[in-house]
Image (cartoon, rainbow, N blue to C red; front, top):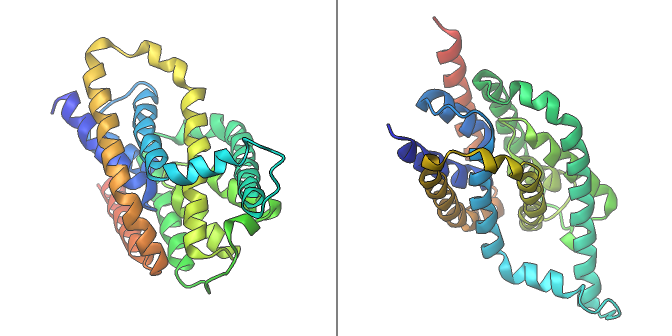
Length: 268
């Protein structure tokens, strides 16, 4: 199998699993292991994250522009502008917490990042978290009422998604639901929170792109485009499933994949 074909497959996997609560990083680790795509560093994963970053930016472009426009005239104290600035504050709070913990955890995570067995066990954790979230009584808190404390907790949950097998979307959406946010609001907060997280991680390691070999560039480009398209298509689907409290089906998937991988790796 050529690198280009492998890149296309991994791009589709990344786009689907970045937003669906099944852990994109965990699936990339498992795909790398079983497909046989050997990478010397994380540059390819960064390229795929650029694709999913573009998908969420375009999908939520209207909401993002509204939020950013609230900063244009800081003296505007209208109810809508104040609400939007609060949302930005809460997103920034979660982002700062995620960034701080992510930097602290980075060295330790790199030691286990490409370990498929570790990813499989973390998928069991992800499955459990999102399964429980479906049975939590629906809350009524809107994003603008999230508060600093809840934003910090959601930011912490996002930081732990640096572990392969822990779903970023699953952990942040579930945490928001546990804290009393409306299901749709928890999902929107999670998607918007992913923007600075993915962007920050990309910029942090962007210098590594200077070492990419020229012959790999078409594969990187194809993988990024595949991640963008597949990511964009699944966002709407996931929002619908969250409202209908049907995330449990992803739990069954996570558990099934994890158990199969564990059996394959541990049995002689």
